[in-house]
Image (cartoon, rainbow, N blue to C red; front, top):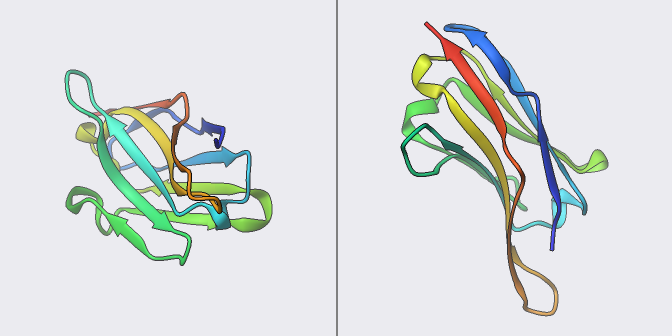
Length: 120
């Protein structure tokens, strides 16, 4: 199990920036995949960006070139830098940790989410 705590959400005007943080209870370097998901009102939760233990990253087409996911191994943090925000980026952003531990047990843990609201 991995406990995750998100922070950094808020209200911002279109074109602005926010940086979300996800604090993990274990080394983020050891987690197979850490992802940021967004759940907009009335919609399903969707992957925004992810980073693997090897450092490879993956982004939804809608955020490529605007969002950057990064990892601070020393402090067990994962960030989502969001620039050029749009009203359609509005939603609750969740951090997710998924993978298989050293004894072969799978895990898939979520944080409580942080609200991001982008006004037009």
